[in-house]
Length: 178
Picture 1 (cartoon, helix red, strand yellow):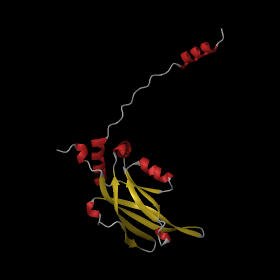
Picture 2 (cartoon, rainbow, N blue to C red):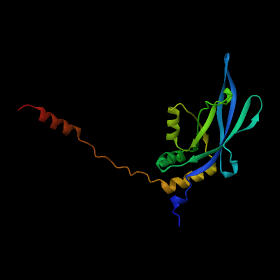
Picture 3 (tube, rainbow, N blue to C red):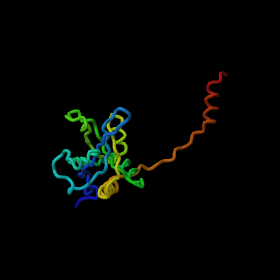
């Protein structure tokens, strides 16, 4: 018989819908990326990792990246719990420049999707781009099950206040020559 912690999924598949558009700023223009949505579940994953062109209207181009997954770790439970406490929990799509891209417009590559704000912050500190998207209901259910099965909040202990005035008097007395 499996325990609840063993039944809670530690990985679930996702696909990421990204949109690219050309933004003009004065005489310059550059491609800007935005994550439109993350779709969770086996039914959206076609098995092959990579991007698929979804639409292109000349202004905006949308791609679906599949083959990604959210991996949950017991060490991240506190961050997951805080994320679930928000009115809108988020998934964080972590992207890095695609150095091997032949086309400059495709120079962004989603490499990881996380439910941890801590992991998202670490990626931003290492020159990654992080997009936050509302978490799909199916992912919220998985994350809640995992947190309930694995998270034990640390018991907060009230620390004893030090009597600084007494310590100061004692130190002054010790330094006074007799």
